[in-house]
Image 1 (cartoon, one colour):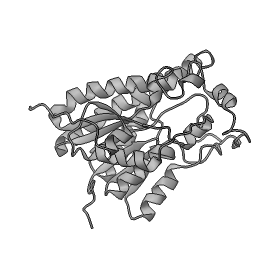
Image 2: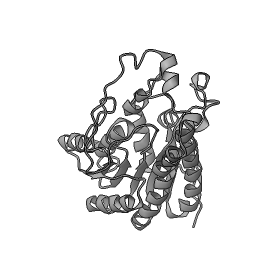
Image 3: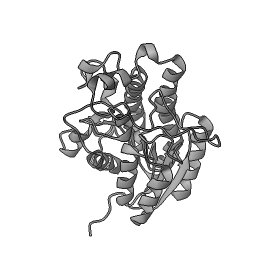
Length: 296
């Protein structure tokens, strides 16, 4: 058998109850990493958004991996510090995947609050383009509090989580941070769905654009410590539950498994690639260019 690429490492994956976060957690575990599976979701609150942290952990453990479910709201500073402390019970953290994101409207109930009645999907949720367009939260229909929450869950959380895990990575002699971004950071405009949008996802896209800039800044500062920091976006739309929630229609799609493999390759740090904003297919086909670390 080939040696697993992340044997003995410990990873944190936020937003790992479903979709890309779940796929990433499973892929990291399959390569030997212990994984802290982080999300707010301990129970399904909407039938269109299946998956819980407990289910992700159970799947990893069933395959012989090590994982820990960590219920945390990454928008809250106390939760951010606690989740890192809990992750360290698996070992020093040398891989961080900032995948958690928020898109208004909709969120699970607060811890300890009664769950709302579970929602069910609309019969035409995946068929009508006009309905899909109307479901995207726009500038005029997103209140300021919701707009702010996109940043609290996205770049603000990533900012502090990176700061919190850097000591572990520096002591270990290096580490890898992968910030999950999106083509929405450039939408409307060059994004594939721009023709169907009207002020598409100002909160989500704006938070992803900020996350990409943060990636570049962190990569520059951490290069001397052999810590790689990259942002990874789907090169094609990937039909995750979160994407399907808003019912877009895409003819050409990618797979969660391929995206997760791209994260694994960046997490190994073996190509010494840092400070890049990449599409996952660029990583898989090797078309990205390596940037060498500066000597200390």
